[in-house]
Amino acid sequence: QHVVLSVNEQETSLYLNGKLVAKGAGTKDITTDALDFFSDMNVLIDQVELFDRNLSSKEVERLFNYKKN
Image 1 (cartoon, rainbow, N blue to C red):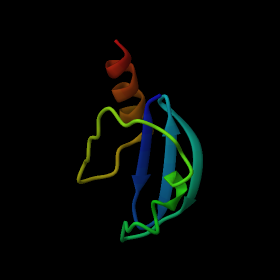
Image 2: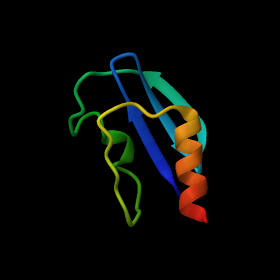
Image 3: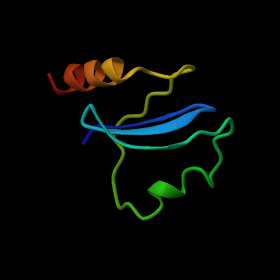
C-alpha cells in the first residue's frame, strides 16, 4: 500500500494508492497526538519520504504511479 498524509494549517488529507480517501481539519503542528490515527494499525513501513511543502493531488498520484512501476 502507498499511504500519503498531507498536513497544513487549513486541512489534513489522506491518500491511499494515489487517491484521496479522507480530509479533515488542518494543524500547524504535527505531534504524536496528531498521528494517533495510525496507532491501531499493525503495519510494516518500508519507506518514508518527508516534504517541506504540501503536495497536490496530482503529485501524490504521480508518486504512486512512479513507485509501482
